[in-house]
Image (cartoon, rainbow, N blue to C red; front, side, top):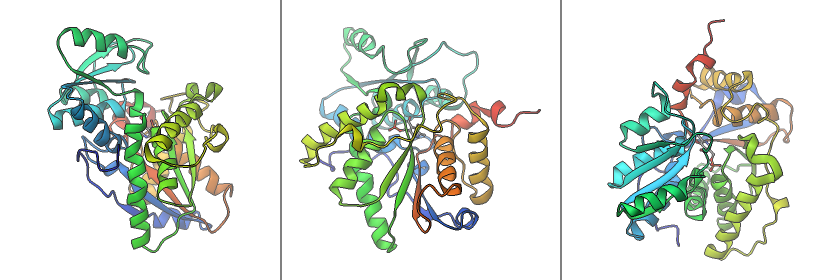
Length: 329
Ligand SMILES: Cc1ncc(COP(=O)(O)O)c(C=O)c1O
């Protein structure tokens, strides 16, 4: 499995640009942004990179139906629905909770993109994928299962490749980067960035901000990242012997729980929107950006550092959380 084994679904390279007014506000640092909110596939996001490899796999295995799972406002599911539409595959999504009376945000887009939607109550992390696969198989469909978040080695290839893309952009701009902040949840983005850093011999430090508190008990996110790293080592012939201790996860900003919008997320959205005209999503990137600002304000990384905020998308969820983001009280 090589980096060229993919279908083209997105717009790459995504822009890398300075955040001049934000950098002025935090003058000890120079802050850049990597715009994976501009990757395409029904409003962008990090999953486009993963899906280029996952859909390639589905086609290689001669599948005609893709199944995956997530929360009702899953960006991953919306982007999978878009990728399937663009490549002529049937898409089935298993989404947590029960059917709402009103569709909005990512759920509305997944519906408009033609996905078959199955509601699964408490199960929002793919617990019902095996059941759905055997049901659809009986109907004669050839199924490709994408795991929760698109996080396996195939999906992570997208972010290995992304590091190569970044390396070229940095070389062209004659720029050196010290730290990359991003939202980490199911682990594929993080594992891909770690493997890519190794493969492309880069020396930035990754600061993954944990999003889902329930992922962190007994370090299950770290374990998920480690599993993908082990597969990546094998596939790419990387020598590094990764250990759990090598995997950073910042858990300081996830206390409210997954999908709960606090004043921190609202601050982050307004901060980037009003200084740079860039919109963060309330669930992932706002939490990660708040974490980054906390690091900068409290000088948790050395002054003079060059920093990238890797914007991983999620815009449609903003409209689902309208009441929390603009309350009338
Ligand atoms: C907008 C956004 N950012 C970040 C992530 C986290 O990526 P990963 O699941 O690869 O850790 C997700 C995952 O759904 C996402 O939707």
